[in-house]
Length: 102
Image (cartoon, rainbow, N blue to C red; front, side, top):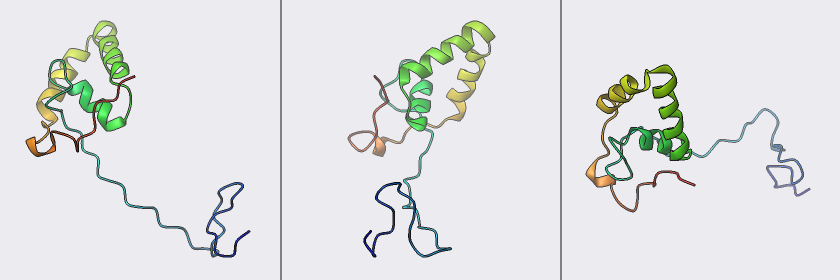
């Protein structure tokens, strides 16, 4: 193994100095925002799909199941519509991630 290596090539375990933990790279801050595009009604499902990085179809399916089975989905959707802010115009475009879809 290379003396300058920070991680084991076989298992990925840190082989640096004992007691010293590697510093993780800072992550971009994620914000829950309703998109101006990629939406059907208000963009609530698209907002959750973008935030959790999951397929938008799965979010819509789960939301429909809560509406049909529990009946609370419509009320929660309306609350989310009011509470979750819209995406600013500056973010709209190539720099914004698209809704996750299959």
